[in-house]
Length: 156
Image (cartoon, rainbow, N blue to C red):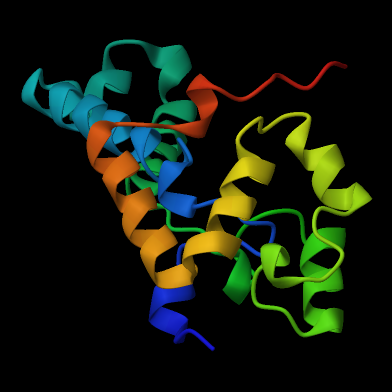
C-alpha cells in the first residue's frame, strides 16, 4: 500500500492532479497577471473607472485565489462533491481505480471519453506500480504536459 504522500496528487480515477491546468497552468498565469497588474499600477485601478469600484476588489481576490488554489479529491477539495468514481473506489477499498479488478469499468470508460490517456495511463500504473507511475507523471509535468491540451471538450 503506497503512502499518502505518493497518492497526494493521484486522483481516485487515475488522473494526476499536477497535469491539470487548474494546478499547473492557471496558477502560473494568474500569478503572472497579478504581478503584471501590480507592476503597472493597477492595484487601485477602479478609482479611474467608477463602474469597476465594486467588482475590482472581488476580481483581485479571485485572481489571488487562482494563483494559490490547491485542490485534492482525496481531502474533499476537488472534483464533484458527489463523485461516483471516488465513492466507488472508497467502497471497494482501492486507493486508485486501476487497482480494482473491474478496471476499466463503465464509470472510467465514460470519463475516458474526455481524457483519452486515462485508461492507458491506468494500465501503465498496473504494470509499473504507483511509485514509478508517479515519477513518470512528474516527468510529464516537467515537460509542460497538461490534460487540457489533449482532453476532449464536453458537448452541451
